[in-house]
Image 1: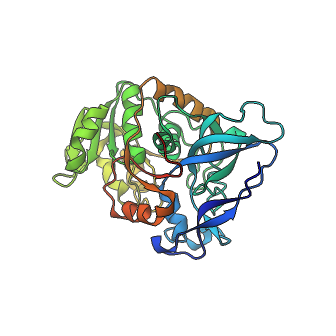
Image 2: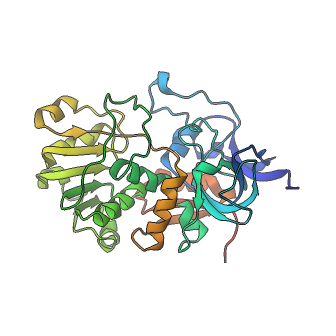
Length: 342
């Protein structure tokens, strides 16, 4: 490929959205077993602002070493423009989507806020035919997270946060409460639970009620009016897409033998209470997986899973996209548009 430079969003120090700079950088070199993707759209995810801010929410010993400048981002949709040696499953011109090098690239190695991205062929799948690039880029990390928590972990990498491997639980005929149901992971978790035959209680602010009912929620709780843990009893599974220290409040909403899956497990303080109540608390680390993305593309093409986009911003306006994320109450995902689409 003759193009040597591209536009990307870089940062040279940790901080708020103001540290993001739109500038020219070299196009990445293509290695064996990789494809080079001309990026059409980039999906935003919480690890983007965690890295931008220096992973301050992690204990110091867990904070990855970051070398500046850094290009944020993992989730892309675009078109392959070159294939490396040994790549036979994909060709130039294929429309693909991917979660790039995660968590291996969590310190800045994924480099998705850019016009071109190199990515291992094993992390790529053909884009769902029914979706444009904006909606396809909104899916990978959030949808893989819901899938790996709820359906198939897809790897056996040890989890440093717990002694036992994470195991999804049966969903058919079960009552599943999804907290943070309107967000990226939450709206996918709701749909996967319904697909598997669960009765789903969606928890979000009132402005998202119709959105979630239209996605298939059987019940809706507006957390600004009542606490879900005060009114729900004997649920089989709670997917807490918000997670963090407050996740333990959902223990009393579960039956003995039920399960609590906090998507963000750091700070969970209810381990002793969970044991007393007979509740399994488990989490996993989402990992790039092209084969699973191919499965999920089929489900999206069949209409089983819909992708919601909260808002879009040009790549050059990544700062404004991060400001939107900081305001919260997101319905679906925020996406950066890299190439204008018809």
